[in-house]
Length: 377
Image 1: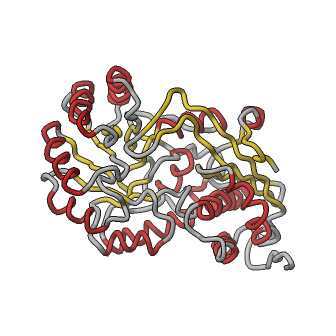
Image 2: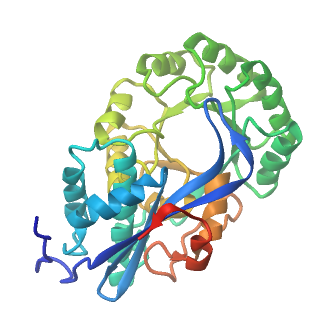
Image 3: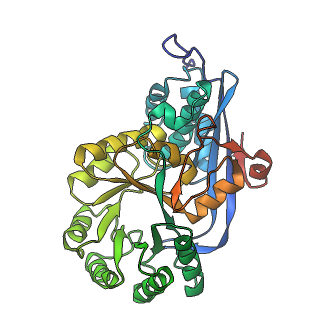
């Protein structure tokens, strides 16, 4: 199959090559949620080259995404007009037809798509938010961690620390030991005081009636957000929770959405008060923009899931956005591996408009210390 060629419809610059590496970074302590335990985080980083510039994108997931990018997606992208990002996105979606688009393939597309948007913005010498069109100057954050593996002391320290830094909301994990969750929520509320909103996330660990009982109990401590109380595949269960949860408690889901039909099903079912989307899973900046348009059509607010450095610019560009998750693991990894990562100010994140694209540069020496097996190329 011959490579596509750059056309005269854009900047006249072709994508010359893609470089990819996968890094696995140990967590700073054992972590777990309602359904999973882990001790490391894997990030797959893509650099797109063209016109003397380099764009950067990444996804979180399995290192196998790096091989998919090298073996399948690069052929679909290299040689294309660098400014025609939606055309490259469509070509990548076609290339994985027989591999299965959701899952690893969607994450791989996400990393390349983001790198292409970043390259386009750098070719134009614009911050990505300026290229996309700004809807706001900053994004509200909520602190996210509170893993079920934490002691009560660590839980209080982390969540209370975010409150002291000016975060308006924080989130803890629940669902692994439902019998202890009410006690852990009480610990969190005492650490926060009355002001910050308290969110909980079960990662789909609970049964419907169990989740309803938890919602009623959590309301006593002013929990205002219950994320994935039941599996995101259980649309009827999510709708049940949304209909019967205490007043003032929003039901959220969508972080495992990979394509528009999946997000549309959640919205058509009336399953969520707030839809979540993750650009590292829903096929990149292009996919995230389309989910935002879907939210606007349904009149449902959007919340960005994890990867704060990657989401910042696109979150400043979409109208229905509620907030962005300041996830402990990803904020830590991004500080380790990238220069240009902006830090929260009073619970908000502001893009650095003095830097083009996402404003990020790979710390190559630091990244290479964490290379996964077969993760460079």
